[in-house]
Image: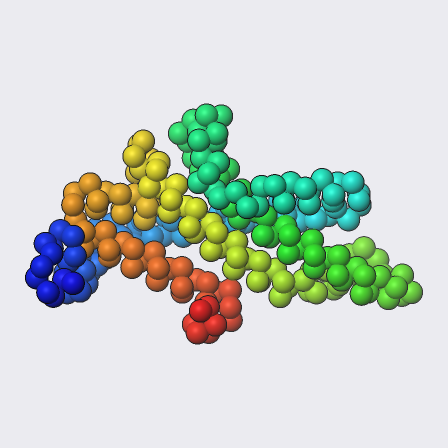
Length: 229
């Protein structure tokens, strides 16, 4: 459509213009800084969610009632997108970094906990008699059975958590950019739109897509790009 000349460049810039804008943002703009900020923020909230998920899994092993309650919470809250809880989080906490962290934890926590809980339950059923027969101490059970046994499941759940958190963060950054928190790739896209820089906007979208593909495929799927799709 861009090459047909029927549409203005402000709507459909050419591929050359998009590549040029991407290079300009990369070498002369703040693309690297905003990308590092967004990626780092996702990993920070994933680390927080992993701590919460491990604690919830440990509690659910000691109390069946607690596990049922967490399953109920997971079934209710997991389908809700992170952006959907944004209004009530802003109402409670205002426009703050804490509000963004809470939204991100909501987006990344539930896939981690669900997979860890299923993994621990499966390992307990499979090796329960073995652990009792050999009278394994708690540390041996924890490290050699549960941690090492759930490593692959954890890696898979981290990939799901990353994809949910990445989408949620970009949306939140765009919304928070409108109200004063000007950071991350989401704000970059919003800023390019305000300046009618469509080529820069599309360059930002390309960066978001590349980050999603690279991290999901290389980090969480064993370094095989074709496995991600």
